[in-house]
Image (cartoon, rainbow, N blue to C red; front, side, top):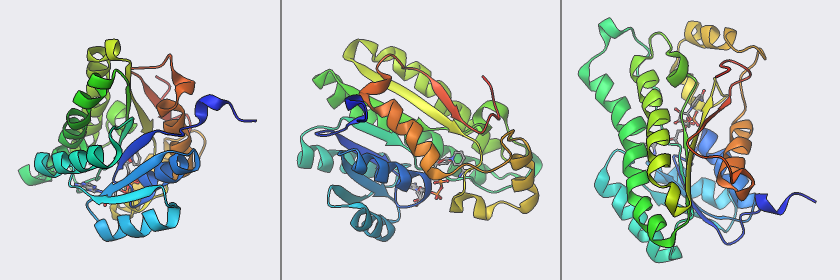
Length: 250
Ligand SMILES: NC(=O)c1ccc[n+]([C@@H]2O[C@H](COP(=O)([O-])OP(=O)(O)OC[C@H]3O[C@@H](n4cnc5c(N)ncnc54)[C@H](O)[C@@H]3O)[C@@H](O)[C@H]2O)c1
């Protein structure tokens, strides 16, 4: 029998950007582990189809993580529906344009920062007050090995993910006394539509850096997130855990 600490019965979880890819795999995994899950995404029609497909304890909701107003409205409606939020998974993210710094526009920079980094701040801020009042909570963000290594032609993306890693460490220390754990994961290249927009040279470069010699699967990231949001990882906070086929060893 699986250890009981992996079970998420009676837990509620928001997964941002869960209509597709890694977020969807996390939503599926948490539903399988008996959590009630909000499939939140800017693409509401895809979120609705995903929620229908993964089960009746999945609730689709529209959110733009880069907008404080949209994030507040998502959080308030879930607090009204569920009465509490146990788990937040900050997963929504974009890769941005694949260009060298010399060709980057301010808009390229701001768009990636707003979604990947400000989005993590806004969503965490929106749930943290209610978690502190209850004296319990768990936040896990999806960073990237790009945030540790820095990938060429992906400066905004790499910087945004380095920011997510450091935000995780800072917030974790602020909320220790409330029994709230805050962690993040750093995947290497994973088979999702996120990489569809990258040129083949970039994909080959990033794959060549992975010692296991292949791309990761969304389900492999979901397994690590499940561990971090469950009580099975009760002595782990303020960490960035890799799921990168050995790409970074720190
Ligand atoms: N695929 C990879 O190789 C890889 C590697 C490391 C980290 N990641 C990270 O994993 C996360 C998920 O990426 P993925 O590969 O599953 O990509 P994906 O494109 O399949 O999924 C991203 C989801 O985020 C949603 N989204 C985008 N902007 C949003 C916004 N403003 N508000 C709400 N939702 C929004 C999209 O609609 C989509 O459903 C991202 O944070 C990404 O940076 C991906």
